[in-house]
Length: 194
Image (cartoon, rainbow, N blue to C red; front, side, top):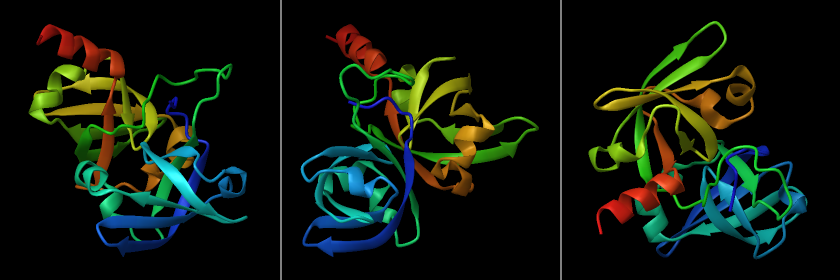
C-alpha cells in the first residue's frame, strides 16, 4: 500500500526485454535503501525489487502490467516517480493507493499558471464515474485532487513543489500517464453493479 507522496525521482538506466518481460534498471537516491523482494511504486505501479546495488535497483514488468501502464514506453534517461510502501504507523499524507494501475490517460493540455500548473487529461468513458470533483486520483503514482471535470477530460492543478519534484515537469501534450482511481470509488461502483 502507498500514499501517492513521491519520495524520489529515479532515472531509467536500462530497459531490456527478457522474453515477454521488461527489465528496468533505475538509478535513484533511494536505491541503496531498498531490499530485494521489497515492493516499490514506480510511476504508480507496485513492482518487486529483484536486484540492487548502492546506486541502482532492478525490477521486472510482466505483460499484463505492460498492457495497462506506460512502463513499456520507458527508455534510458526517462524519469520515474518512486515511492516505498507505507509502513504501519506512518502518516497517510496523500490517499490510499494500491499500486494497481487501472489504465492510462493521455495529456490533452498543460497550462502554466502563476502559482499552479493545470494539466487536462482524457477520460476513459468506462472509468468516468470514478472521477468526482475534488476527489482523489493517482497520476504516475502521485496523489492528486481532481480540480475540474468535463465530458471527455478532467483537470488536476499542481503546486510548484509537486511539479518540480516529480516527473510531471517532463510531460508534454499527448504523453501517456498511469492512472489509479480511488479505491473507495471502485468498491462503491462495483457494489452498485452487483
